Each structure stands twice: as structure tokens, then as C-alpha cells.
Length: 508
Ligand SMILES: [Zn+2]
Image (cartoon, rainbow, N blue to C red; front, side):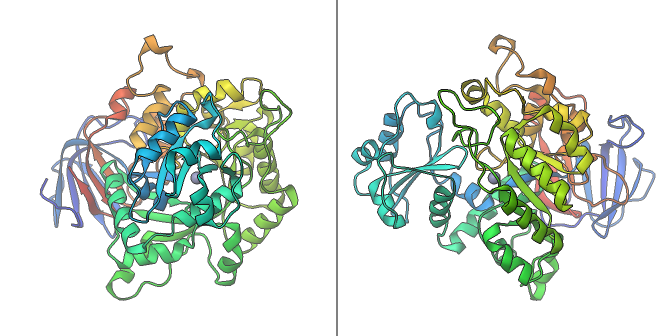
């Protein structure tokens, strides 16, 4: 390959292209692909055109559209690698001991991530954590980011009264996490740059960033500082909706505040949706469900009631903002679908982890896309058995939604799962975790597996998964044909090059 990272390519030679009329298959004959003005302008048999300008030799690889992760928390994801992973801690005592044994970060605190306290035999308490951690403020974030276990020093640092369990949930937990995320912006921006480069190396060209901050400013600052590895659509939260509407932000608008030579990159960052978190989560047992959680009468909860949701979505829609409504339990999904129908809002339901049978058809009918995270389905298998065995609605109904004509959008919800679109595609298609064979019980809920075509379409922006003239030159060259690759080959897919509007963002 002759081009370098940062070069704008005019011709990609010698690649196999997937496209319409090939039945979701790649063309066995290699093509040359001509790019101009950030778009694909021609696809011709290899050698039929004389290559001009910057040439990228595709080396006989396969060309697919650039991939998107439709739900990330970029700032939190960038920090994750700097935090203590407690994903495999088997008890409260073990998690407390391990965070207590770790070094404080340069802000003088310890942050552990990925705890799954719902599966622990012992209850997390303030006393257990205090005994292990002493006077250094220590925070243990749950895997689903809907709860935080804090020691007394962390409660004091947050200016909140400690409680006996040491646990904060939902809004109180979000507030503590927001506070934790207010580190030196220059340092965090450098981490975000590293995380974006890693994402481009997996074939990613864009993310929907749902960080809980005033994201326009953060992204304009990052782009001013040289960020150019990804497209970003950034969300707005209800506490900032008034400001967004007053300042006239509309979904699709470019980020403001970029001047000079970096202004040309403003198109990379655009206003995304209003994000509303309408219920809790499975791991925290707060997702709003029609049947109670085991051992009681608790059905989870709606974080916003019906009238509040309608009001938020009406204001957003009138102001030109799309809506992304987090709804995990079946009751929350029904409410969210009702609200889309009543308000005429457009956008997505995020997660849709438990959907009533009667609601499956409504996604397509209302034009509401299902923004789902295939990796969570497999990560949550044990929690599903523990907490949702009695539910009668469909859990993780990926194939059911696709068959009903709904638009699927795949994402990771990083840092809940890593940004890794090929792993996401592999697990959506194969319904197994890495290294699992038939001896491990086989594929999980195989009836909800989607096809490679459906998975690729859900992982791209246009929703087609097809490379064709007239579309953006957001492209990936991979080392194997995804349409014939098995799930393990999809998981380990070699990404040779990634192009964003014809500009090379990654080269193997
Ligand atoms: Zn999220």
C-alpha cells in the first residue's frame, strides 16, 4: 500500500466489493474504486481505468463500508484502560480487597470498574469497603454504570452523606460518575485520541457519543487540538436541553466554535439526539419490567414518568432534535414507543433488552430504530437467568426486530463493553463468546442470531452495508470476505486500512 495515514486517496485498486445485485455477496472479480470529494464516484473492473492521484493498493482485500458504534461514552471509555478492572471479582470481599491493594491515580483516588454485585454471594457494605481502602477515596463502578459502591472518603469527597450499604444508584450514581470524569481536559483529550486511533484500527469511522457533558464544547476542543480519526454525533441530556434549544442546536448540525484551518474538520462532529434514560438496568435490577424481580414485588422503575417523557420529547422534536430513549425493561420500552407515537419524535430506543411481543412490530411501524448492543446479550446470560427467568416478554429480540422490519443499529455502550465492531458482529451472528465451542452449551438463543448482511448493515451508517457510488468514502479494507467468514473469523477480522471521507485513518 502506497498511501500513508492522513493521505486523501483518489483510487483504491484491487479490492473485492460487496454491492446490490450480488445478493449480499462480495464480487469475486477485483475492482478499482475511484474517490473524489469525500465520496465514491466510480467502481470499475480492476485495471479498466488509469489510476490518478493518491493510490491505495487494496492487495486483493475486501472493501466494506466504514463501521459505526451507535452508542459509546467516549470520555469514560478513554479512562477505562486507566482504571482497575474488577470484572472477574467473585465477591464483595474480593472486590474490596483488590481495589484496596491498587495504587491511587494521579487525582489521588482509586476507581474500579465492571463490578457485577448482583452475582456476588455477599452484600457490598460501607464497612467492608472502608476496612479495605482506608482514607483514599475509592469508587467501584458497576458494569452497567447504574450504580457505584463508595467508601466513606469518597462520600466525603462527593459532599454526600454516606449510607450503610455504601451504594448509590441511578441519578445519584450518575452525578458521582460525572464528578469523577471532570479531570484535566488536555489529559483526557489525549486519551480520547488514543482510544479513537484504536477504534479506527478496528474499522470504525464514527460513533454516537452519549457522554454526560456539554459535548459540543468537548469535541470542538478536541478537533481544534488535531482530532480527526472519527465522525462523532454527540448527545444532549435533559439537564442541558434548555441550553441546546436556546442556542438552536439541531440534530445533524456541525459543532460550532471551530476556526482557522481546523474549521474544515467541523463536519466530523455533529449534534446527535436528546438522550433520555427512561428506566434502570438489568444488572442493577432497576429496569422497569411487567413481572417482579425474584424474591419480592419490585418491578424496577421508570426514571422519568410518562408526562415528563412526553414533555421532553415534544420540546426536543419541536427544536429539531432527534430522541434516543434508553429503555431496557418491557414496561419502559412500551412507554418509549408510546411516546414516539404521541409526540411524532424520531430516533432510537437504546438497548431494548426486554420487549413485549406486541411491541416488536411497533418499532418498524413508528420508524423507531432499535439501538442494541450484541455483546451485552452474551455478557448478560447469567443475569438473565437470575433475574428475568419469570419475564414473559422477549429478551434481546434482535432477529425478531429485524424480521419485523425494524432498523437495527449496533453499538457497544463502551465502557460497558469494549469498542470492537467485529466482535459485536461475530457475537450477533454466532451467539457465542470468544473460544466457546459446542461443548459449552452451543450458541445462546440461536433463534435470535442475525445474518452477516444484517449485522454489517446495523454496524454502518446508511443501514445497507453496501459499497456503491454516491455514498461517502467511509470505507474499510479487510483481509477476508465477511459474507463467507465464520463467526470466529469475523471476531478476528484483519483490518488493513480505514478511510474516512477518502482520508486514511488507519493502515496496518
Ligand atoms: Zn450508555
